[in-house]
Image (tube, rainbow, N blue to C red; front, side, top):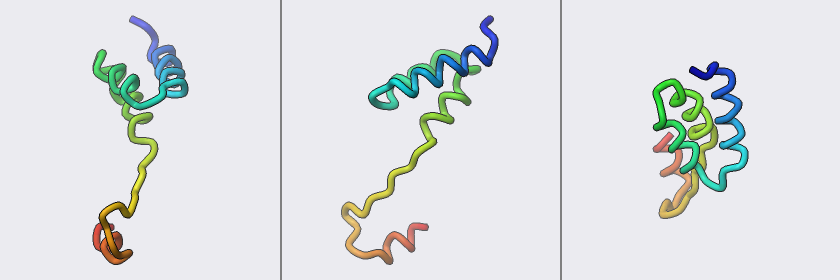
Length: 63
């Protein structure tokens, strides 16, 4: 078994170099030990847009 710290470094590098999150998601499906650190990268950013939402009030209703 690899030490978890080494796995974390590998996942950090994959996330830093990945063009999209698909590679990180694939790493997270390799084994259960990899999943929490993969999720850290997968869900570290959230994008909210107003596409299809005509008013700021609809955003406030969502929040």
